[in-house]
Image: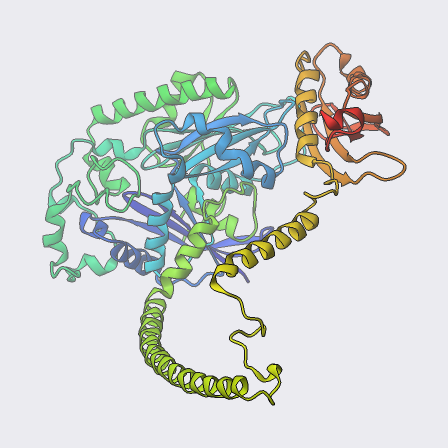
Length: 599
């Protein structure tokens, strides 16, 4: 059976789920997690070792990492198409105005398509900093894992909810609302009755808020992994008890770009946080999260129906939400308990389900630049050694070749001097003895022609002029006419389309261009064959159908149009109820023809 390891990597700790099976049938093999101590955050190798030891070296065919949605820019975007490849080509540019506080080159973007009943596709776009992805790869690399998929918590939770049984339902049924209380943030998802995603929000508060301002004594800190529980020494030489005295240190928490709130103390699990929190702190947390949930539900359009709770079980949360929202609130189990009866973390479960083929939310921030970077890091040492070796080799080769070249130069000079002296002697004898023909005289150049120094410039000029004439004839700058300009045809057509469609209230778009240059012949002048696809969407008045006829008529009236433009047929557009067609036209865009040629 295939196995998949899902890891929810957070700033204070991590959760994991190891699944086995297939997308249709799978079960939880093991699950668990740990919280970090401040000394674990000194470098990625320590965190990688902690994760590897906690998972106990679980081998998996696929590893999927989920990062928290806290601190992630999330926006809804409407586009006239939803094809993933096309969307990814324009996604960052479409939301560039939303990234005023971030460097455009330091972030990556991906999306989930929402089913909100709108005419055009709605995309929930998430923008994540590259350094968070890089930090996650370093940590997992230290644990000898190279995850091909890195996604966000709201996408993984949406995938986990696919484990719930569903039946075919009629339109108009109530929306389903799910609240997952996490450590750094909480997730609110609204699903349609058929299980498709309608909307999502990441609420900026989790159960770690219960520890704000808490003073941590050594005795209340939970052990995070077996190797630290009995006072084993870490890499710094401190034992577990002494090291825990530094809990609450905030300086190391931000070094690995894991996100989260570094002002909250580290090393505290959920059960300990509940024990430490006072009744007033719990009530304050319940009041705050109820306000956040109510605002999010209004924004998402979920006004009725039950609210299902997942994640941390905080006493009084169910009753408090029910009283403040006026809706039924109930805890929810995904029915995916491990063999020990433990309910796994829902976000880590969704990540593991993604690894075995449940591709409901296909976000992946593991883009090509990081794949290549990770591959180069693995062979960095070998590449450096090879480059140093090549440099040394070429240096020695250069020195040897320099010595050889110098010797060749000396030898060539000696041979030339000897040959020249013999030529002088021979020419002298030929010129002194009338019996020898003049053809026996050895000339002073390879062409066999004596050229004086004064005549060399004139000969060079003459040869250059001949070469220039040959080049002009080859490139068409002589008496030959150059083919018409496709670039000029493109310019004329774009100016026409902009003016032609300037008074149209609806949307229109150019699908494709094809330009073919044709030389002049006996039957017709030189021109450019142009084919372009145009799609026109309704403007609400129903007049868009006649736009195609008007377009052809006005295009024919242009002075640079040759013949009549053609539009064989129109078809229904794939989205938005528009019409699309391919227009063919001949454009005179070359050199002036006829009387204008001499102007």
